[in-house]
Image (cartoon, rainbow, N blue to C red):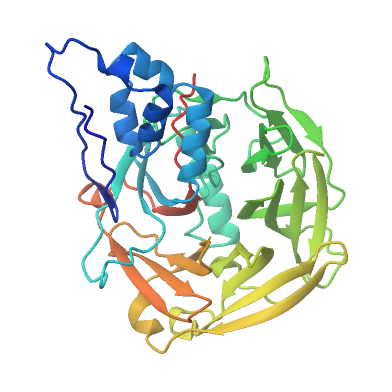
Length: 419
């Protein structure tokens, strides 16, 4: 009888599993006596690396693991155990690591570092280095402290990642494949492309890419069509995306700087309806937002702008939220969370930025420099407690050609192959 594959995922480290079967002289084949439904149930309990190994066992198993009902079930189960992705560039390749997102309740403390699981590296893009340097130079000139945002990777959607370049590329870091989907260049009147966003239409179940250039022209391309093309979408208010984005319920939200100077509040949140391909601008009635330490998050099911209050780490004593209560009337409300007295000890002498929120209501912050101890910090809006976790990437992150580390929440593993 089969030894059912065990699933044991310690925080940030996965144990290798083994499949045991009958001896080769067994008169019956295991594949004939195990119902496919039972095999699917077993496969959905496995880590993604073991699913990849099982594809090599037999043609039958390979066909089962490619079935639509299995991949959808695996994705559904995976959504209940989201992971945190860490990514950085090393020698032109984008490397991905991950750990479980939810804190381990059986772990007494987090005094020792966590070793993340190596996911994959993204294929080299010959245009990426030139593109990245122009983007970084532009933002360093306008927002010199904005070091932590994942400016080269869009937030993942249903397990897929879109790496930003002049030719956007989409890959699945869970399968470890070298295959990827590449879109044609979004041609603009100028050389610099400001921002690329990866979005999804949950009604028609279509993935799209939104490209916004510095000439205030936006273009959209739909994946899965026979020939990928770009179509222009207009926004009536000229603006500069600030790389603070979040995708929720079929709408892409991002923080932007108005360029028309027709209002006393320069910042606004732009909502892009993916299905209708329409923009809506939501003015933020705040004269001050710490852009360098801000983020868009999902707070109790609502959109919120959150930032660390203060201009230096010693002054960051509270988290300030601006929560959107009514999208039609654009009504915001303010909430302030006082940070614990030991906050400075947790984040002393480091640059901390806000990553996002977990389903448990925790606001997650992270450092970004690879040559210092790398931390992620969980702040619970329910219990007002704070936990710091150190991540140990090893010698790779210490190499001189390693870029800043970006932290991405709410990644779900998808075992569907890119082909």
